[in-house]
Length: 233
Image (cartoon, rainbow, N blue to C red; front, side, top):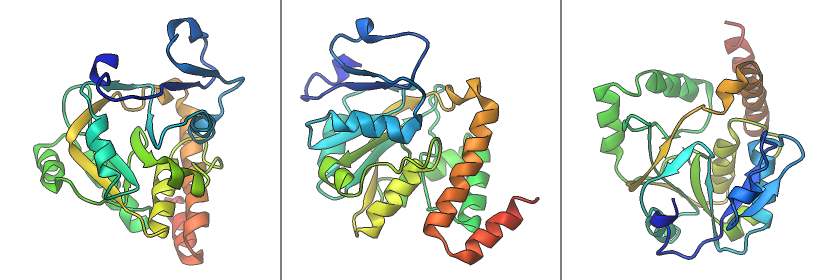
């Protein structure tokens, strides 16, 4: 990783969500936060961000692999947007669907259909055809944000333990009149769902919980009613 970041000054902050092993000795160059329990994605990243002095924050999942110097293009993108996300690759080299529309019953139906076909030639070509553009959200697995704006909106909403906190963050960015940009000229590898495979039952519960909370936060009674009906089938 470090060889790809050498050209840019950076801070390396690790929020350890109570893993089995204390990794501080293996990460001497990092600001290492060993959390006393699993705080979830939002709270852990908020705590890590409090330690940062940088003008931009780049959140990356522990199951990602930096394969090139992607920071300069993302930092440059901060001139046209408040949030930027790179192209995200699966471990087999195919492109992940790492952006999408804000949650609604219709949008979730479309997004899930696309996800099911993600590795098909048609969907891969569709992702490539988007180029650089301004989606509603980019994935929190690799997300850069202007630090001042991040703090102004209160960071990630800690009511989300797992899932949808990235969509919610981008929604609040849009509500400020700011933009989110997808930068496909640089890429990162993401081993999707590696961590949640260890806790599949909890991951499923947390997904439903986050989904309900997002709808209550951002939608009126009708969308919430549709969500209730949708979840009955």
